[in-house]
Length: 220
Image 1 (tube, helix red, strand yellow):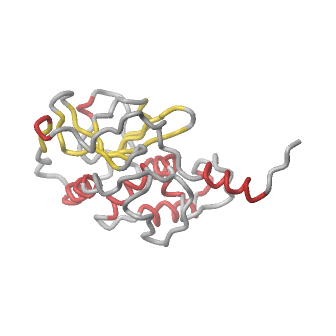
Image 2: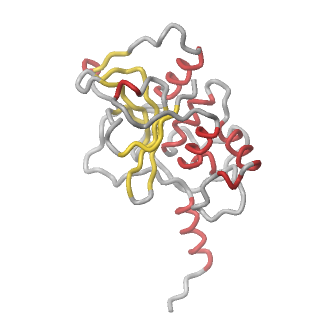
């Protein structure tokens, strides 16, 4: 039987236990967003929470700033810890946007997991919460949003997914993805675009129905 050094095993485990919302690299990189002539920025309802616009603007602002994807485990500050804005994973897009309105999902998820660890997925083999990574894992965010009463139906057509809504998908092979609906209307498909990072930096694309939807959340 081949024996592998303990350090190699731990390194492999660290990468696997990190965040996996990346699809296989495509031969061509998608543009940051569709051409301006094909889109239209719509007004939010007059009775919307002021936080809604701030969060949407915060997620759109990441397009072109986060230019890469790195799912490796990183030790970060707590609270308000983050990896460099130039990189990150799909969940970081949501975390960074929420911080624009003073909501630190790193802290909120960590505190909820400390109180209710058994309510969260155990697929990573951990015996307790880890503030460096818990909020960067899509299943944990899904669990937290559901526990906060923010979950909506995953069914229906595109009209049920409104700007500011958070959507999660199953990419297959045990990989989940997360993004946010924004108030940019795509004329070609007649639906709102999604801001997300699936491997080549934060982008705004028409991907609402690209994969199986597993979660739909409205926080604001």
